[in-house]
Length: 195
Image (tube, rainbow, N blue to C red; front, side, top):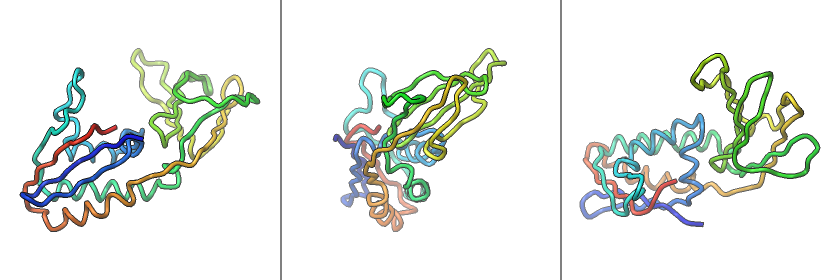
């Protein structure tokens, strides 16, 4: 499994945060705002281009306090949801033993929606408000919690496979590095692509 690396520089001192691509992907999970905030605070996509992605060695400057707060918020969210994030998910329909991944259109209580297991660590349904010309989310169902949902033409069942989550071990050393540098301007280097 590949990895992503963020290096926080304070002059000659630095802290290297290396995480798996799966862990980086968790930051993009639906209804997981701490991940979005972490990506923004660390400037992961500020140098992103469609053609080149995140260039190796791209850098941004941030206050230590901003970085520390984002890391603490992410750690709190990961610890809160660790029992859910520690699995990869698949789904099946009715009595069909086939396990599916990716995304699929479904209908629940007359509403069209999307069922997805992306990114890894998440399994969800978004139902849309059909009264609008634009797609508005009318309901979000976290299938990691309910495990089965009745559809208009049967039901969907969720399957779990254990997976490792590295954030609980990776974040405390980063937080320790940043706590004594809260008032400093630090350089954040993106040495590997994130999620």
